[in-house]
Length: 219
Length: 208
Figure 1: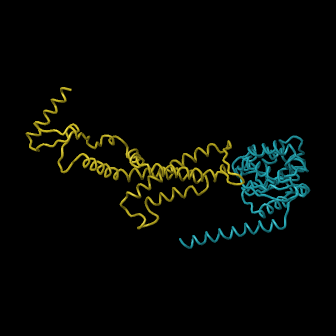
Figure 2: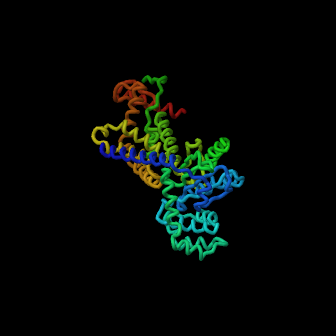
């Protein structure tokens, strides 16, 4: 009993150490300016010159991400993105299920043709339980074919060759370096990469508003 | 004429109110007739409701303290609160049993009997929602069954105790003490005197 408690405590300490350690090294070395994220090919929504950037690390199979997409995101879009104050960048953190990686790869392929957000919304509005087969390779191709104006041949070539495997892996590594293990997780920062603030969970719009307004008023 | 103490009209502790009630309802009444247990049940329910709201990502403390209920979480929220209330009831009933049971659960084994059910009721809420729902509902069922069993013996001891207390209150000093139409019979126990009293009581009853 005692040894079990000690073991749990040791696990807790070690995970805590890794977490803080990861965050520290990140704070020292990495900044994520919007300009670089876009250049690297991350899907984004909004104005390139928006002063605030939100990086959203999500998994297409995660129901809390879906909650964010259905609740907070439309309000953020309406209030801050359409008014040019905020740019929303999508980061892949496909860790909820075995099919999550395929969904991320497919979504990134649609970004080649500027159809990422349509595909993104289509997947979330058709979300089913994790690994129930709703994002099997076949179904992902099926979803892609429903997007008007998407060159399905080009998509299939990209998807079949796993073109963005290393790209998605980089996103995962980036998220982990911030200590993010749950989805959705967010970084709200000035678009030059300064003053990043990390948020976790399917927060309501008011929570984002509090952070964004603080950053806007701070200039 | 036999004397009847009219002033000291005390009704006999009636078991009639407990007759025809299931042990579950009776045990429920006994436990929650005390304010402490109602308070404890309410407190437990509120605590578990808050905990489940945090786990369900409905309640946030950072960056601002906020509660929100998105459409997809409504059913889960209702279920979690129903379970929180049931947990409150079960936990406080278990504590009642622990406190009134003569078996020394804690000294014999940490993981036995009612202590285990109290612990498991509490621990269940620490895990993920699915397990939380399934096992809590299970435990609530098991506990109610167990409680019914345990209390069905215990209840009658309590009822006897209650009747004893009432007996003392109404001036019973020895047995047998008779009550006639709710009035204590204080005269001689000789058969003739007793009959006389009963007869006059019947006459009185008929007049009315």
